[in-house]
Amino acid sequence: MTEHTSSTAGGGVPEPPWWNSPSRSASRTQLSREAILDAALRVLDREGLDGLSMRKVADEVDAGVASLYWHVANKEQLLVLVLDRVIGEIELPDPDPDRWQEQLREVAWEGRAAFLRYRDVARASMGRVPIGPNLVRFVEWMLQLTRGAGIPLQPAAWFGDLFALYIASHALEDDIGRTTDDHGSHGDDDAAPDSQAAIGAYLAALPADQFPQLTEAGAALAAGDSDERFAFGLDLLLRGLASHTD
Amino acid sequence: MTEHTSSTAGGGVPEPPWWNSPSRSASRTQLSREAILDAALRVLDREGLDGLSMRKVADEVDAGVASLYWHVANKEQLLVLVLDRVIGEIELPDPDPDRWQEQLREVAWEGRAAFLRYRDVARASMGRVPIGPNLVRFVEWMLQLTRGAGIPLQPAAWFGDLFALYIASHALEDDIGRTTDDHGSHGDDDAAPDSQAAIGAYLAALPADQFPQLTEAGAALAAGDSDERFAFGLDLLLRGLASHTD
DNA sequence: ACCTGAACACCGTTCAAGT
DNA sequence: ACCTGAACACCGTTCAAGT
Image (tube, rainbow over all chains, first blue to last red; front, side, top):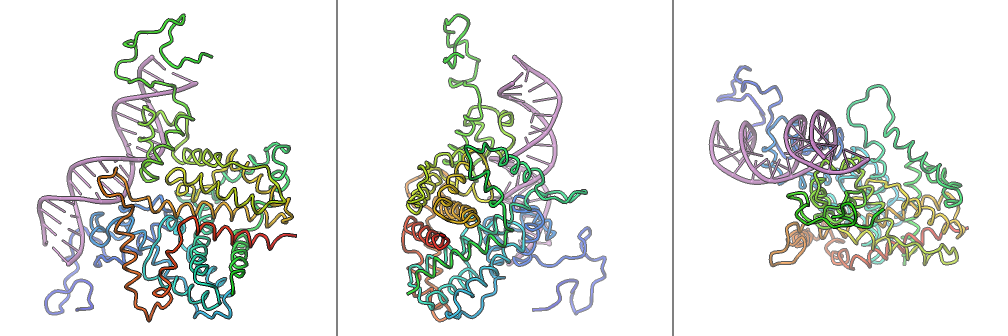
């Protein structure tokens, strides 16, 4: 199996460049599932989930659309593979049950970071169970840690679900903000500009007698950046889990 | 404003049926936003979120596609309106802070039921914040209850988010099962047939030395029906919130 | 074994035109 | 004021055909 990836004829003598097929430009590497996943992740990050199409992925790898279907069953499978790839970016420390709370916290932030690294992966993850090598690795790790910490099997198993659900759906909330800016900037750099303001105006205009709490506490609802809110929920989940310890 | 909906000419004398416009069949009511939302919910329930198209909604109300755009800005707004409508189906008892845990539990199940009443509403809700009359009503109710129960403003506000996120994302997990059956049944009535089995086989085939927990505890992961799992997480959230009481 | 163009059956949205 | 057909610029997927 030769290491050369292009322009290799009979006896190692290089072909002249003009032998390359006429209109194709430089990067004529072999198409592969890996390359397709890379491209898909790039398109996803650049254009969001709604902007991700098989045609754009094909363009990104400089191939025809139909070619993708040799390496991948369909768009759905492509998304699942991309998700497993992102889950693979989560680093898992050796499980140390004595420090189960810290480690769970640590990995939660790791997971959040991975999901926020590319636009709309969290969105893509909702409603899919991307079972694959990396999710399986993740679940095994969770079980080793929590079971080792003295949490009975059933709560441990169910908590894993809850934990993953929380990380994903919270990351999705962050994606909402950066969802509306499609075509490149043209001067102003506010994300989802008027909608944010419109919501504020709507809430501010609510009749105080019908909505006493909302008009009084309105500010608190929007208070805290996304990380603070994530920390709050994470802490709440851990307190709840701790109550299940032997 | 007359109560008659069709065939009414000048002085109450009915028109003969053949006066109706030529090819249009019976139900020629005025198009309205209400009617469009009803139709959208019907299509959503019947065909799932992926099967919901403006064209099918238009067919359902016996109108041209373009007509929808008079009553509704676009598909996105249509979805938001549908969501607010479903949220409106959640019944809220008068908040009684002395029974805050029971009431929260009660409403959680109510919300879950509303989300599961139509296929894929939960799926549609992810990544959207359908702020409208009914969501606002819901938030006000939550705040009255939790604040009345002695939970400080910030935790109370943030918990609302978490609570809603949990209900929606858990309902979404239920939608996954019934996602794959498109065209009406033709004999066999198993939902997502081979994929379920394939997952089981994959997990069972994992090397026991690399995945000790998964191979030992595999059954526990799948154990419990969806309601039991929902109850577990709900309970965990409430325990966590309780730890924030004054 | 791998890639392709062309075709099929769809989409959401706009717009000039009708009543 | 409300509804329409036709058009535009897209989709995912299949399939016979090429190398």
